[in-house]
Length: 137
Image (cartoon, rainbow, N blue to C red; front, top):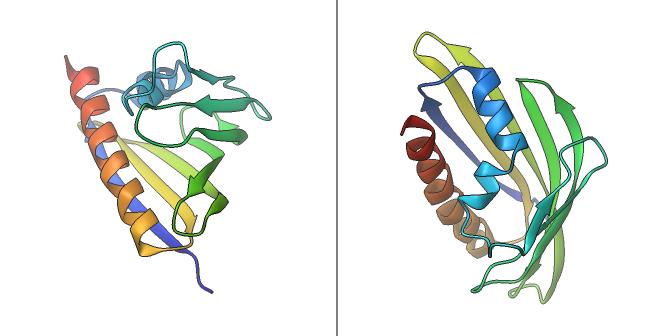
């Protein structure tokens, strides 16, 4: 079975270094609506990620590759109601400089169903939008 993916881009009016630092400090994860005090992200290769929300199952993962100011890769293990099991997916964040600041590309791969992909697409779209607005305020 072919796994599904989502791929999104958003421009930011800040330098790649600033964007990378904010992600490393957990700002993007906070924008997902995690419960305060119920999330952690040890921002280093091999570091653990744990996120909890009120309305969905917890996510755990591991940072697998971090290249300062340009790339952040991590696993994203979530419970799929449709598959009735935990699914390990992968996220790759690519940050590039451009004439107006920087661009964030988020690629999330490994979904077993269109429903799971669509749910995550909705969540990431909203979170990245909120992150962008917060970075510009």
